[in-house]
Length: 161
Image (cartoon, rainbow, N blue to C red; front, side):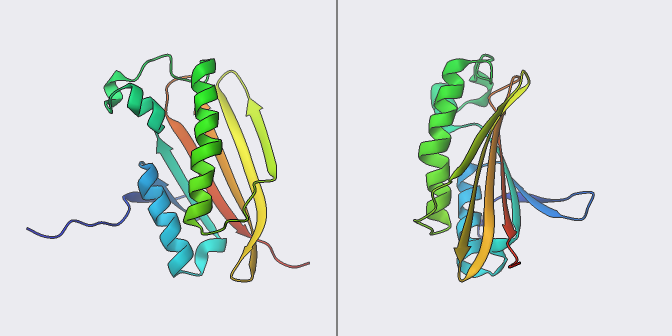
């Protein structure tokens, strides 16, 4: 038997404008990839990643069976939205900060867009790593159809004026 590939499971999608986007389905794979990119490469300041996953608190309540997730776990459920926001603020953003080894990351630029179809939290911060300035953006969305959460992580280089 061959060795199992221990690398993060992802798919690469090319958008209409030629941008390469890496898409993950597991939070652990997303964090592992993010950590390796910041440790091993110089591309950390121009990256686009997406993560589509069920939050840990949803999986816990459904006993790790996606078929048992309640239909009411969506953006119309105040309890779900509250727990998701807590998960994002206390775990996801903290885990991203640890993965990129950037303890000073504060996410000063925060906002929220809410509509009937979905809720999106926006987080952004201008920062620097290895003397390279860049903007880090994280958008977290939940919709009215199911408990699936969509994370859009992007870093964009900042060029001096």
